[in-house]
Length: 95
Image (cartoon, rainbow, N blue to C red; front, side, top):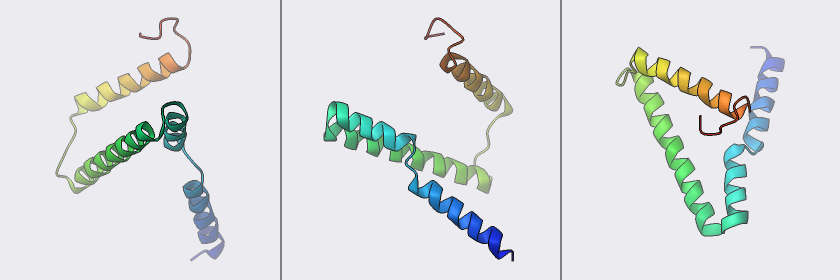
């Protein structure tokens, strides 16, 4: 086993775990604007959504759930639509 590579990997994982992500920013912003009750609801909602995604990924890896290629292609198209809207290339924020 390459010890240098293992140490680099462990340090990288630790840095990723210690760095706050977009969910932390969302919860902090909600707390600052709307108070701790709404921040708690936001935290519960984001954690619940994460649990649903983890469960779905686990079921897909086990082969219990499969996704139709049509749904996957629609997901890709939707992602490109989101990127297009967020990038500012459109003047209408709804389309």
